[in-house]
Structure formats: structure tokens, C-alpha cells
Image (cartoon, rainbow, N blue to C red; front, side, top):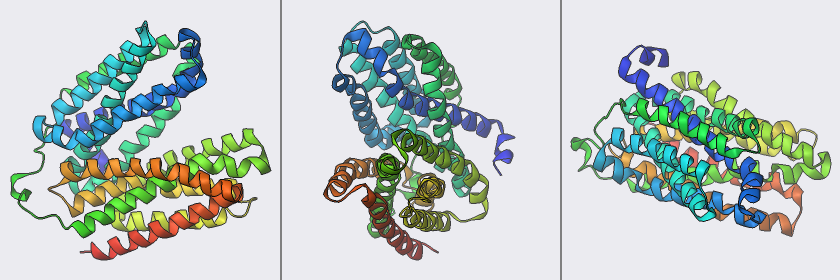
Length: 377
């Protein structure tokens, strides 16, 4: 189905620009960690201090995600996304040539602002543009984030220890993407005929809870898998298995692209959460656990993009209003749950990880089932 869209010039520009933009945001998020050593040596920083780069990035990202709906409705998709990519370009240029640590932190904040606008804005634009075919389009778009996350560290490795050249190369690619973005389609945000329609808040709260527990579970599995497996397989293999989890999630989104053409978005999300729960239960068997975590990643792959498509189908005229709230709520889920999961593990043992994941999976499946029943029509 997406091949049909590729044959149309306006959709082809949208698809190519979206894919390039998501490769960029996946790459830059993955570039911070491998570049820490270089920044420490350049500015004489401690390990704790250099971590502020990521903090400033995510603060900027959260601010821009929350404001993305208003910005899109005020200025339109084309200006919003072109500006976001320009922010990424300028921020990475500044990061490459920054003479001071303070300016480097500011550059990370600017990149985060662009990151959040691209993440929320491009997801909204795909949902708005592809409508009934938004599920496969969004799955393929979000798969590109995983491609970027693989390429970003390779870019750092290519120029290490001169990470300035890595971010300079990133800025050049982002600059090229900016010129593609100038030709993006610019559909009307929140069509006039839907502005007076009341929002069924019960259903919307259901979506908030789904995204809250989904991202909590997805990041929770990735964050604590190594903790669970290290006592049995060693720390190195624990880290390797975590990498395979993310690889399975990326592959899963590519697989979900054609599959979601035939399976309705609510059913796709429901089946994905069910299969992920099976994976969490299987992870209690330590011999199966490495494969079970990979299965969880593969099963979870379609939930976020297909869930956004489902949201757009239930609230077709409210995409710009509701998507930023849902995405921000999902980030809050990670902030709240990470220390809570750590506390639960500290009170028991690392073997509690799959039990916690299974518990969250049961809640997620229950909420998804209820919303599926309420939105079947």
C-alpha cells in the first residue's frame, strides 16, 4: 500500500523526509553516550557532570513535545517541522564547535527542542496525511528511529576521538533534510468541522493509560534485562542481550508495516500486548529468558506507532490536541516507574524483573482490552 503512496510526488516527499528525520533523531539520541569520554577530556568533566548533556536534551524534548500541538495549529506542519530540523542542524553545529561546556549544554537543549518537535510533529503529520493507512506508515516511520540508533554510535566510532567531526557530519545531513522539509505537505490541523465535537474523555484516558504502561514496560524491559541476566550470563552478555532486545524491536516495526495493512490498529495493539505478556511470563525461565526478552521487544514493536494510528482513528479531528499529551504522558511513565522498579528489585532480587514486567503486562492488556471493546465500532 505504501508503494502506491510513493508513486505520488507529495507523499513521496513526505515519506522520504519523515524517514530521514527519524533516522536523525534516532542517531543523535544514541550518539550522546559514546561521545561522553570525548566531552570529558575536552572540558575536564566528571562522569556525573557530562551526563547533564542527556538531561538537557530530554528537558528540551519534553517542552517541545508538550507545545507541538499548539505550534502546529499556529504555524502549520511545514514551518514547524522545517524549523525543528533547522534547530537540530544549528544545535549539532554548535555542539561540534562549542568553546565552552555551558554552550555545549545549551546546544544539547536546542537539539532536544528540535528532537521533540520532529518526534511529535512527524507522527501527527503521518497520522493526518495517511488516515486509514496511518498504521503501516507510522510503523515504518518509527522503525527508522531504530536504524538511526544503530548508525549514530557508528558515526562516533568512525571519527573517534574527534567527536566534533561526528556532530559536524550529522549537521550536514540534517541540513540536507531541512531542504527536503521545505516541500512537505501542509494539511489543515484540526479541521473546522471537528472543532466543536466533544472529546469522550473516558476513551482518551484509556489511551493515556495504555501509553503510560506501554512505555513503562518497553523501557523497563530494556533497562532491567541486563540486571536480571547478569548474575546468570555475566555482565557482557547481559549488555549484548539488551542490544538484541532493541534490534528485535526495530525488526518488529519493519515486519509490522505490511502486517498492519491487513489487521486493524486496535486488534494489532491488543495482540501485541498479549504476546508481550507471554514473553514476560517465559522470561521467568532463565534458560529461555534471553530469547523471551527478544520476543517481548518484537511483540512490543507495533504498539507505539499503531497506538497513535488508533488514537487518530478514534479522534480524527483532535490529532494535534491529543497526540502531544499522550506522548508526554508516556515519558512521565518512564520517569515514575524507573525508580519504582529499582526499589522493588532492591527489596527482593534481580529475579523479580520478569514478575514486575508480567504484572505491568497484565494491567496493560486489561486496559487495552477494555478500550478495544469500547472502540470496536
